[in-house]
Length: 363
Image (cartoon, rainbow, N blue to C red):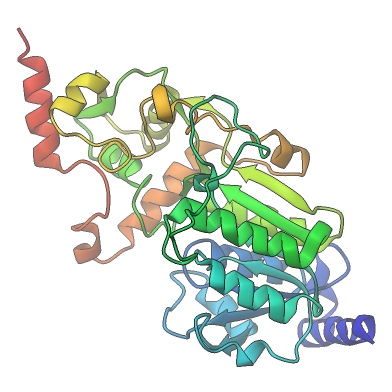
């Protein structure tokens, strides 16, 4: 009966979108439920899944308009509720796969997995490399120890990383070998509402002398939201992908990243590499001001050097960074002026000028 119901759903998709619905997809349309779907990676998932002929439902509070691909959202089923208090829209329903984008609190995952465990075949939880207990070594793989909530912490009260780790465990407990855990690093590209990588193409495009962190050889990792989102859809399309995957990009050098951005944007920027010690003296913060960068030493030595071998083996692929840089700038320039005037991360221009002047003035 379960298989028959899903087959009926697939036929409904073909009826609605015609024989071309599966073009470029698996040839076997699925019913996919996305928990979340209107922020950063969700719209990319919706577009890709529909383009591959799948039927998509999204479960949201109905409060956030997608920042792009809006026309695709006319073709999805909108289920309205709240993961803290109202899952009634999910009751009595079946899907082939669930993609859980929106949970950072264990209680959310506990309730949705309990409700859906006998109603879906595969459940993919989008976690984070922040789930790891630390980054004290290079090449961390999926077996590295994760953070734990302390005995005195309520499971929704602890730090972000241990909460994500507990969410992962609830997913495994409910779905076993059909649980898929994806741990992204920094997600970048058009639609980023954090500005944590967008700072770099925006700053390079402005030109002039750019303060860059430490040395050009420092490691950096990130992943384009489109690469991540499309791979996530492919993971849930067929059985057999259960397990845990780090899903950040290949390790590259920070200097190479900035040079590729400069080349892609045909910018006249120059880079001045300021030591970690001097940046700390000047209160230039890793990650917050120098986005996508942490000191490659001590407790953060491995943060931008995480192994993604398992994900690559499972089909994760990466587009050129030049493509990401160009599309990010195009998207950024399309935003309202007041949004662009108030970036969420990066080094303010006046602070950058002050630190560069002090750097050059050293005796």
